[in-house]
Length: 221
Image 1 (tube, one colour):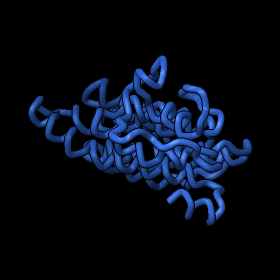
Image 2: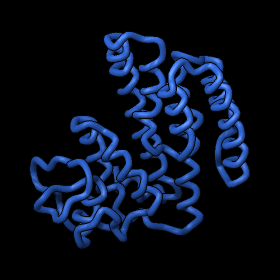
Image 3: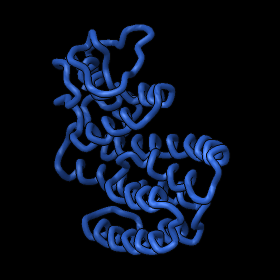
Image 4: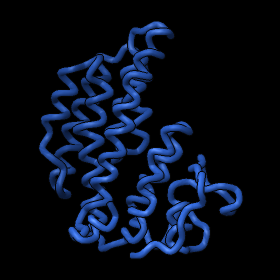
């Protein structure tokens, strides 16, 4: 799908949804603008899974991190596809959340549990997703037994619960709040957060590219 409008010079992604383009735009509202659609954070041209995750990431990130998503705006235009492609994209994000992003967050506390999550078979279909869910539930159960704080337990569970939903916050909270002073927490949080943000965006990019033809990929790059 060919984009119809260019973003204004100096455009900055904003937090949350907006009543109109004049009030600002989040990631998916910007996609609607570029596609020439009416103002909305659920543009018709975009995959529903990608839109849902895009809204979550947009609102989970701080003002600087959010701008890293801007490069993806034209690539999200025209991603609406079949139910099969939509499912594959959800598997990509679930796989990243469980086997990559959550382990990054809990490794500082529980390296063996992080290794168990990384060792789960890749999520590629309904059956592997079901098995990964069982395995990650077992890891969460073990984490609850070991957890020094409720925040650590909730973070590990939340990050693995649903695709990449708020994985940046959940995973970094787990690393930042166990047995540390406030000063130590701030340092750990800052160090842990950036690679998790980048890993989540990279997974999101992989999901965008599911089942696109090589020519389309080249065009979008």
